[in-house]
Length: 339
Image (tube, rainbow, N blue to C red):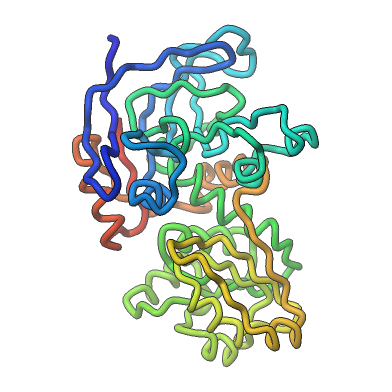
């Protein structure tokens, strides 16, 4: 077989098309992965809508791919045929620039600071396809007991929020507020609860209040004023793609609170009120994946059933329907496409 099916983004703001494209082969230090499932991330929409631009159209996106290694290239010793793996966004750094010479772990910081990184589904084709060839070190082994459908969103969304919580380093008994109960936020509520913290969900959507409690939230509030009324929070995990609710939530944070920013948007300006920031010694921390061990931890937590991503599964023939539902805000909460 020399061709395969892939979800091609033909142009900016276009519908995704399932097309026949050349099937890749595993080159030196690469593995060929048969994709079983791939999640659709909000970052995919930013790429497909041309808000973020790293290469010309058409392209194949997808950095939440999971599947099985079916071939290994020359020089690969860390992976073997039959391994179940995930493909996070940072596939490999260039290894030669000043940043790489400092020997940082793979993370989204690497993606943004390496002079020439290889980014799965961003500047090289991604996991919205039947097969992908990727650097072996750009894959992560999946634990036993986790399904492909649940592993896929964990490779990015789960990784993002768990790494953010770990970056916050909250003290035992801390109160963790999760802003937004969406594709990332619904996982944040579960991860924070699984870690043993008092969890507060902040959502403006009344229809999500009961769901937030079902996911493990001890309290659910609509805004910063209500957050303050119930005793405030030590950590705010900002997962939403809009920043205004995070500014509003500041009034409900306790002194010395940490705001962990992981939400990005097309309008990416984040203007903090200086008086509140300095008067309460708030700490603002940008967070995106941070280090591969946090992905391994997140996958293990999902594998043992302590966290369960809420997914809608679509066969590859309906990939554009899944994408359109993401654009229209109609998902509860992650779209996963099977190949």
